[in-house]
Length: 233
Ligand code: ATP
Image (cartoon, rainbow, N blue to C red; front, side, top):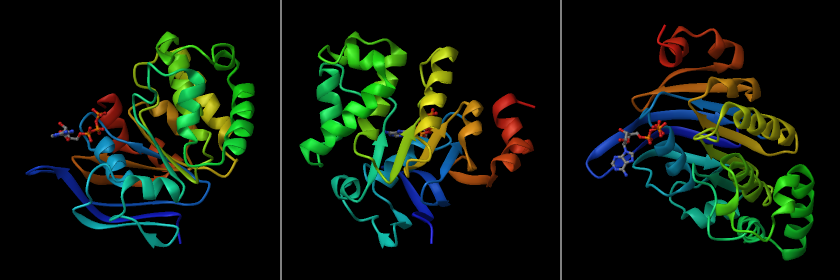
């Protein structure tokens, strides 16, 4: 049994159906990449998984339990975290953002975990009392990652961690995520940037709300559909 089991999921906005029966699994501790062009439905899928959008058909199970009717906070309490493209609250300080990420956890645990993360992100530690708005784009993304990792989620859903970042920061994000792989957190990363494939055990290519290709990293790297989508070949 996978940690996350998505079966035939349908979702959309008002009369507009976007997802047409998505099947997807994430095993415990696994890193899975969700690839797809602009408007393929990646964000819609992540928002449906965390409960920000209703699941209109199919089922979502986490650790063997159906969660598709649960409110987002109930899903978060079960160990799922969601990092949106924006990721942080700009007017709050770095400390406050991280405290929010650990909102459901005992304070002492959050403090311990925060200190460990500050060791990983020294730039953030140096500016901890400043508003997140004072950070560079790359540092903000690091804060977004620290904010979700502080809760030590069992499954982290990430929406385009590379968005708006210069290539040098994209590489930093990949390195940071790579270093957190192996601490037990499973990752489902929606990305347009194929460089993230280097982190992935497996992946899915979605196209117009349907899974077009799925397989191990090497299969995606060799896939004509992935090449067409990303490189127009
Ligand atoms: P991107 O990389 O551009 O974010 P994506 O794969 O994440 O792409 P989605 O954001 O899930 O794609 O969008 C899928 C489709 O849903 C698009 O056609 C988009 O216009 C539409 N859509 C997204 N949000 C809404 C909304 N709030 N209301 C109506 N349609 C929406």
